Length: 537
Image 1 (tube, rainbow, N blue to C red):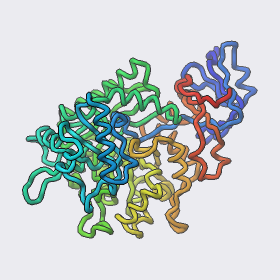
Image 2: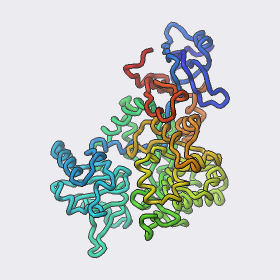
Image 3: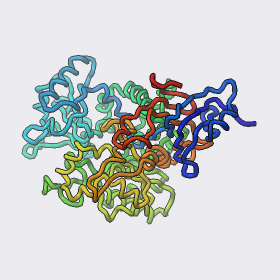
Image 4: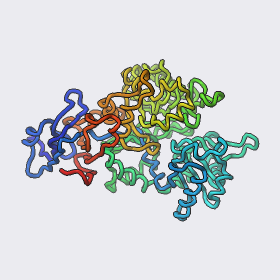
């Protein structure tokens, strides 16, 4: 006996992302699974008196979006002063003082999103003493929009020194005065504060659970039904479980746990155990996040050749080639997936070398290791992604014109020809998984898809992919990257009923207008979790 159809979508333009059957008209759902994909006539025959029927109004229906690199555990930043629009340090200071005055209950005054050029004083970052002029009676931390530079006042800097005392000297990327050896209050890896700084971490994440509630409330509005949290920890996992108990987990989560230089073999055993405990359709773990370099904006991405605007600097790899190979070999042998942050072409090559080494040592398996960002890439490394089965996890909106101006200055015109190389990698047969890197960029998948199909460096060096490929990279390939392509990522019978209805047919829009389309309905596990007021069903 066939399952009772609980939900049916009729009169739609259903783009399934199923290569064998890319288009359909209607979908039948029983509880949380898709049971039939077909035309209105056959789906209508399956409906009963209790079936909820949604008229898609001939609108485009897509699988739910899968954001393959998002920092949901950084959502506490939504309770920080938002500094992205500030054009000078004076404007930043005004916003921080206003935020501090409005929240006397906050033990830490924090700000986020500032652009590098806005905070500079004579081409340098302000020191702790200069931030004391903004706020001095409480710790103050302000983190750049890309998350790679943190500026702290004296109180915060003293706390950071104490938090890292006796531990790895490069934790936090703490800058010291070349003459006195004293910390300046400039930190080139502030992410270390979040996941490895004990009580300082708790201070920074004072609004962590509220932030997580907020971001999961936003995801359905953007049609996002699955996310990959790009760096998390055990405390964050507890917050995810709390959110699930509350009924607020409005997207499926694949959670990466961070690998630090302080991570021990016992820590890895605990992570392997966590992978076994968290392996259902809502919360999964088992991927390990490592950082190979920084970012081009702050000249910390590891480059094969020096920066165009700083000829004495080529960035710095966070691990030597041999150390990274040993780490990846160990993780791979334990059956853990790796995702390595690498923006510069040297960082990417070192990551590929480590993955190649693990194949030689452990044998080839379905590891699905990943490299995140890949903003600069040497032409000779392009085919290695397919050869090694490495997933290219990329964020098209990072190639927005405003960002590109910074990149042109840092990398130079010649290297921009192979920057943001999703077209080259796709042409070479690599698996592309697209994402936002929120809160670094807008979490809206449609703006990312627009960037992927419109961004051309030049006529000779286009970076576009087809709309079909961009959608696949934001749906099915994201599921593949978390070993879940058999249960989600496309609209197929037997898969989870996660899909969206859009206001516009993306295939009929000029490419530069795709980002203006709206999500009208988001269905997660057969339940409508977002419905726009203007959606008339």
